[in-house]
Image 1 (cartoon, rainbow, N blue to C red):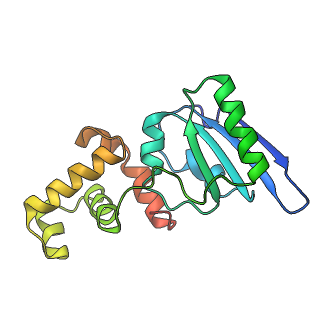
Image 2: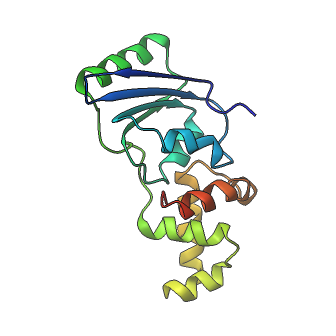
Image 3: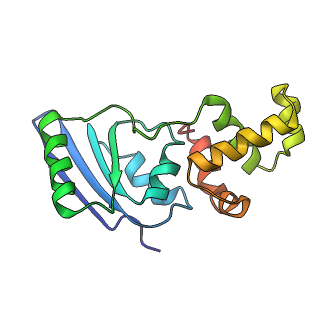
Length: 165
């Protein structure tokens, strides 16, 4: 399995370091993200696939990070990189960060094997409401089926354990 297909680091100044990653693999394991999440840069620019962008919106990322599409043209990638380097940081959070705290909790519990009925009891809600929230959260993170969600079970559980969800 490929991890990060390419990475590049540069010093923006004596205090600021920019790291650029290009990630094309589907994220299934925490170890695929470990180097990215534990890197020491002040700023991180990550080019990845659309579905990875959606999944990364689930995470609480620890650095000044900008996530952009890997499917962009070379000119667009260069333009984003130059803008990022001149500003030091485009934004402090991914623009795709859309999941609510409740949606994160539902997804995390669900992939750990807690049934919709038990999640509903824990959160004092109707099971249909919880199921709808789970489905909406899955759509937000780019997962279409429960099978895809459970394929990401390891990465969701591990990211939760390390405090990124």
